[in-house]
Image 1 (spheres, one colour):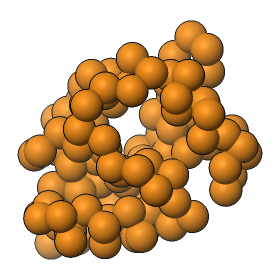
Image 2 (cartoon, rainbow, N blue to C red; image 1 turned 90 degrees about the horizontal axis):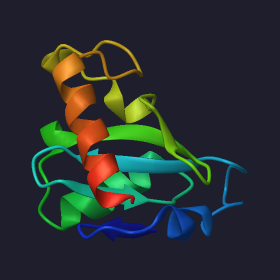
Image 3 (tube, rainbow, N blue to C red; image 1 turned 180 degrees about the horizontal axis):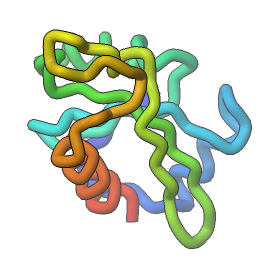
Image 4 (cartoon, rainbow, N blue to C red; image 1 turned 90 degrees about the vertical axis):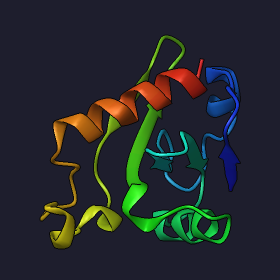
Length: 111
């Protein structure tokens, strides 16, 4: 597991493959601090590590990354995203503003 706040290359992300899930890296994004936790079997494990480092639960969203040589595809799906108290009733990040913030953080930190 790795938590990044400084950019890494797609090559570095690709080096995490094959990880637990072949061509996919599980990740958690802190939409407030702009950090990404990467590469654990469970996003809940990344979430726990980020909480221990001072993140707030309401700012953490689970995603799946599918890196290639040209781009990193983002899938907004994780069990940790089920948060009825925040208006998110499914595994997918439903709020378009949060999805855009996640995309921006991914594009900033994975170059």
